Amino acid sequence: MLSPTDLILVCLLPAPRDMEIARLLGWYRVPLRTAPKVLSVDYLAFYQPAAFGARGGQIEFIAPVHGHELATRAELLRDEADHPRAHEEYYKIQLGGLEKLPNPVLAKKWKRLTFLYTTGEYLLQAETLNDLVVQDDERKLLWKSLRERAENSKLYKTDLPDVDIDPALLVALLGIKEVTTNYDGEAK
Image (cartoon, rainbow, N blue to C red; front, side, top):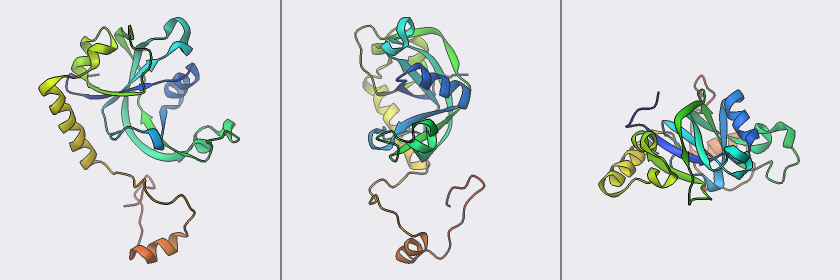
């Protein structure tokens, strides 16, 4: 369960279909090109916009984060192979089960939200999105914690050219003697 010291990334859940993907399949997608700097957080909190009808304009659910990986949109949403961004990379954030907040956090004045970092303490006490904004000295502590998480997590190189490169050539160019993978298939 959520604790006051947990790091939270509040993110937009564009449509009810995305809620079902998170609930049933256990993942959430973020385009690599617009992703926030740090994804190594404890929980995602899902902001539901007007597309959710009467349940829009609020944060109603959170989910624990278990990790993330890169995948193309086409790999994530196989029924959208012809989508204009089908070949773009996305972070696939693996989630635990969705948890309903005791009290939803209402948007009130805020109508647009993409990403916002906060803490479990703020989320548990918030009545509106404005209450999630971490202020003053606590904000410095939040950013310090996020920087530490970023340094301790595996970061992806995003400034590489978008071309197909033969792995053998890449190994030769970088002077790597051997590439091995761990049990999850990640290079180590």
